[in-house]
Structure formats: C-alpha cells, structure tokens
Amino acid sequence: MSRVYNFSAGPAVLPEEVLKEVAAEMMDYNGTGMSVMEMSHRSAAFQQIIDDAEQDLRDLMNIPDNYKVLFLQGGASQQFAMIPMNLMKNKSADYIVTGQWAKKAYQEAQKYGKANKIASSEDKTFSYIPDCSDLPVSPDADYVYICENNTIYGTKFKELPNTKGKLLVSDVSSCFLSEPVDVSKYGIIYGGVQKNIGPAGMVIVIIREDLITEDVLPGTPTMLTYKTHADAGSLYNTPNAYCIYVCGKVFKWLKAMGGLEEMKRRNEEKAKILYDFLDQSRLFKGTVVAKDRSLMNVPFVTGDKEMDAKFVKEAAAAGLVNLKGHRSVGGMRASIYNAMPKAGVEALVAFMKKFEEENA
Ligand SMILES: *Cc1c(COP(=O)(O)O)cnc(C)c1O
Image (cartoon, rainbow, N blue to C red; front, top):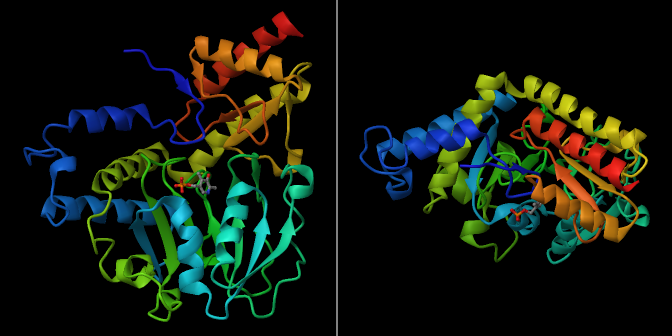
C-alpha cells in the first residue's frame, strides 16, 4: 500500500486512523455482523451512531442547547436555496460576495426574493476580504450571508461582519472544525462535510431553534424545510448513514487530538510553514492579501502558466497530488485541512525548494 499526500480541495484527505478503523469494521460493525452500509437507519445500532456523532460535534463546537444539528443531503449547494426558502420572511437578504461559492448563493437567493450584494471583492479576483465593519445592511434584511473561508481563492474572514443586529448565516464548508467558533454569533452555520470532515454527500446545518418554523416560502418542498428534519432528528427519510458514521469517527479523532484549540494550533503551524516559504521564494508567490489568508486553502503561482503546469506534474510524480489551482485563479492550490499531517506540508515545501533551485 502506498499513500500520497493529497492536497485536494474536496473531497479531501481523511485521517488515516479513521480510514483504518472503518476498514476494520467493514464486515462486522460492533458485533452486528454487518457493515454500517447495510444497516437500517431505524436500527438501535444506527441510532447510537447518529446520537454519538451529534453529541461529539456538540462537545467539539460547544454548541448551545438552543441550536439544532441537522445532517442533510444535497451538499452545501442545496443550502443556497434552502436558506432563503426558510428564512426570507421579508423577501430580502444581504450577501457579502467574496468568491464563487458566495456568488452562487447570492444568485440562487435572487430566485426567492431581493438579494442585495452589500460588499464584494470581485474587483481584485476575490484576493481579499472587504472591510465589513460598517456595511449598508438593509433595514428589512432577513439575514446577512457570508462564505467564511473561500475555498477557491484562499481567503478567510478573520473577524465576522458587523451585521447591525441582523442574523448571520455562514457557509463554513472549508473551515469546519479547523478552529474554535462561537456558535451563538450565528443564526445558521453550515458546511458540506467533504472538505474538512468526511466523505462527500452530506451537509451539516447548525441552526438556532427559533428559525425552525412552518412559516416558509409558499411552495417550499417538505424535504427543503428545516422543520421536517429537525422534528425527525435528521431521520425523516434515509440519511447518508455511512457518511454520518465516518464523520462521527472523525469527531472522535478530533476529540482525541485535543479538540478545536489544538487543531487551530496545528493548522496555524502547518500554514506558517507554507506561507513563510512563499514569502521569501524567488519563484512562487501567494495570491492573497496576507492578513486575509486562509489556514486551509493556500493558492500560489509562479506567474508562468507552463512553469505552473510543470510544477503540478512533477509534484504529482513525487507523491504530492491534486495541487492544480482552480481554473479561475490558475496556478496551484494546496489544501491543508485538519487531516493533512505537518509532514505533508514539510514534504511540499521541500519539493518546492528543490523545484525552485532547478528552475528559477
Ligand atoms: C465545496 C464548497 C461548496 C459546495 O459544496 P457541495 O457539497 O459540492 O455542494 C460550497 N461552499 C464552499 C465554501 C465550498 O468549499
């Protein structure tokens, strides 16, 4: 068996310890004589799995009692519609557009009401986070929406926007569980799990209880109503049971590692190794304003498309894979999520040094 260092933005690297555990339990989960894949979602064994997963997530994030945790399908993208369908009571919402995912959410919301773009960083290819301390928040806005870590562009909100009392809704897909958060500052905090938590095919929505109502936009499907899933403990229909199981394993892994304070320390340490190298490199340079840099997604370029392609190819041959940047930024992107070991980042920087010596 030979494992690579996988810098994919998502689906992405998972902790090896977790992969080994789920492999060991593949044929016989905990004496049930079957895999979790084969198990009824109404069984006692599965109820324990989902209950434990929720409790471990609550412990990790310190989720207040007046928030529900929902394990839903449709990915993060489905939330782009589900959020306005459930929250746009005044048919007005404000969006801060800091990248393609925020833009998609903004465009989707326009189908359901008035979506107002109150700030954007599109003028400089989303390479920074706009000043959000005094934005023209709409008086009738039902919520203010952000994408907290911009997976494609490598920027992160280091401070939450001043929403002037409006509800904050945040997509944390690519920074989920990378550091402690204060859940009470959000109305909804949600993310697809395939970036920093588990396998693809699920989104976790953490939502304040008073936002879960039957008062949704007319025509909202049953399956897209938060109340349906909240009332049924995420078991209204068959959930992505195997994904919930693997995510639960990752939550336990995170707890054993020391929780989110410790993950933050590790993530800062890993990101510093890469950014410090980029800041003094003669060949490579980061594409993001230093103060807004993400700890999770690190885009960089040489400034020469052919050189970039050569780097991506040679890195892959050396076991450092999925370093090609998103087509809209070009160059390279290293996603260094929780499960990427420090040794992987060190191997990447060592390879970049060697490449620079050979090519600069
Ligand atoms: C990947 C990603 C999405 C889309 O996730 P899907 O689960 O594929 O719908 C949305 N937002 C952010 C920030 C992402 O990184």
